[in-house]
Image 1: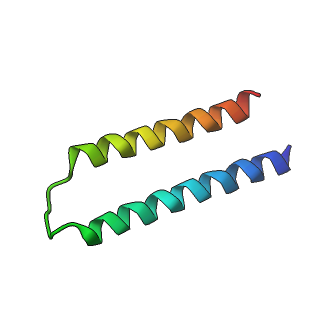
Image 2: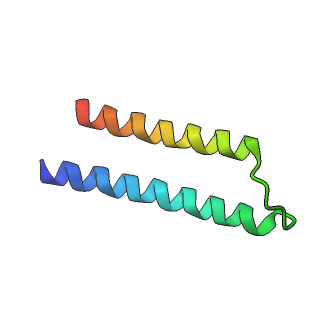
Length: 61
């Protein structure tokens, strides 16, 4: 069971690191605008909900 938890943790860390890289990449390419894009916020929420659904699926299965 501990190897299962370790693999779930590894997957979560991977997804979070990818999301952080995407967020940092978009920040540097934007033309010095301080306003958050609504589409980017919606996409971030969607990614987070997909990650939660994946983790719940792993834990229930």
